[in-house]
Length: 254
Image 1 (cartoon, rainbow, N blue to C red):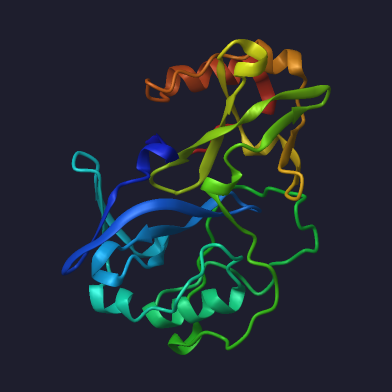
Image 2 (image 1 turned 60 degrees about the horizontal axis):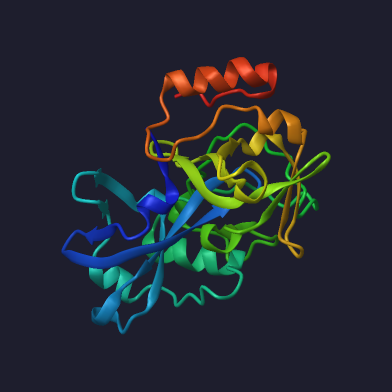
């Protein structure tokens, strides 16, 4: 099922032996647009410390009680490497984190293609690599390309012929944990309409200027099916997008 990322903020994270805290944001990979980590505010039991929980540690989700189960203990989280969520998470920190939790890494031998900020966007598939002999390499070079969902909210969206709005939210597939769409608020241009933009249509992101460039015209976005955030994204809505954009839009297969 596809869900609003903002609606998942505040979900309770439950370890094997107790409650860890609440989700405050997510980190996603800006090359594949896959969720990699949940940022959890631990509250008083861990002195308000924020911790990173790899999405691969997630167990079952209880959507009725707004709870994510994780296959970790509170002691494991207590002793996990400190993370400064105000700074870029380095690949070395990721290695330390995965070593600590004993989880398989998600990256391969070649990661950084040198095109930081220019998104090649391959098929949205999470490639998990199991470490040989249960050990991870001590060092791996390269930018992990992690971005905060909270920090990217508000980025300006530019079509081929001008600005159309700003990032308000994201739509995530709760099985694959891929960001399928960006929710664009066009209130300064289309009188409050919200539309969905697929990461497949992004041609460039200027991280320093906080701008997202999509390979669509203002007119095509203006006439696209309106997104109603109070309704689920079902097959009917996807069909409308498919019929409207034709071959430009290719829904992710489950």
